Length: 230
Image 1 (tube, one colour):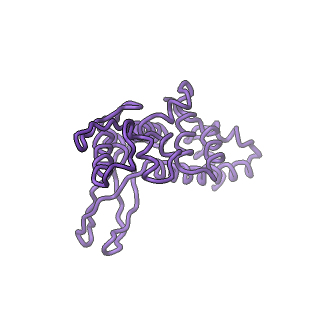
Image 2 (cartoon, one colour):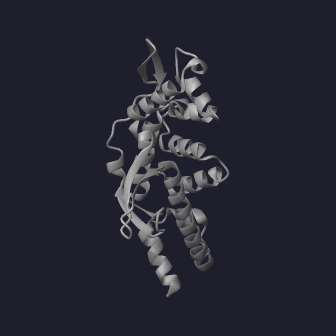
Image 3 (cartoon, helix red, strand yellow):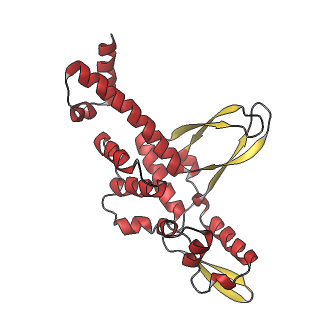
């Protein structure tokens, strides 16, 4: 994986503004992993894909992260500080990895879902139909389907990361799902807002082109901005 230059990150953001989150995630990875075949990225397990996105996030913005949350009980706003490196310690399954679940004397072979599966499925049933390899899910009882989903989650723990939160105001505790796809895109959007504002100020002051301003190091941009603002 390689870092993304400012120009490429701006282009990905521009292309992805009206795209679904999963398409944005794959676009980021395909640009950051130019040697990877696009189909291989789509075939990654959700956990392995998200581990790569966290690695990319660290290359762009560092390991330390923060998020603002509201307590569901009292509404108090909390500032959560964490490290993305800590979140991706769990192993993620290989693409196409299968698990076996015993049901009614039958061994069900189940494939861990990939991005391609999620893109192709609009419902829970469609997703399970793609992932259960040797049985028709329509004849499986509901408790078996629940067991399949539970086993998928155990096999691919990074597919849904849950963080335990405690409210500092009312002591209420709850579990919050951390979605790296939406989290990283929100950070990119915030970065785009800042960088476009810097481009506007420096282009207005010096007549420089966008690509020349983007080529400056962050420190040099800040020094020029400081001089413009006096």
